[in-house]
Length: 122
Image 1 (cartoon, rainbow, N blue to C red):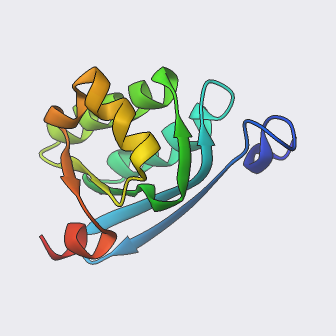
Image 2 (cartoon, rainbow, N blue to C red):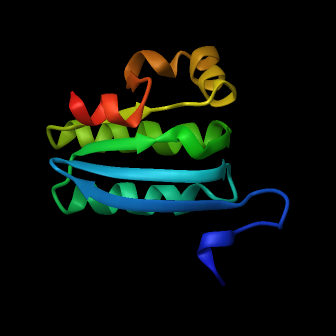
C-alpha cells in the first residue's frame, strides 16, 4: 500500500514532507488530516523526537482539513516534544484549520505563527 495516498482519490489524501532547517524539524502535511491519514503525520513527528529533533515546526499552509484525530496527533507530538525540552510550532494555518484549533481551545497550547518564515525566525 502506498502510505502517501491513504484513502480515496477525493477524500483522505495526505502527503507529508519532512526537512531539517537549522535547529527545527519542519513537517509539512499537504491535504486532509483525518482518521485515515493521521499515522502519516504521527510517524515523522515521533521519529523526529526520537532522533532528538524536538523543535518541531508544522507548516500547515497546505493542510486543507483537520479533524479531531489530526488534532490529537499534534497534541501528542506536543507532549512528547515538550517532555524532551522542545515544542511544536504551527505555521501558516488556513482559516478552516485554524477554526478547529479555535473552537477546541487547542490554539492556546501551541505556539502559532502566521507563516513558516516567522516560525523559523523565532
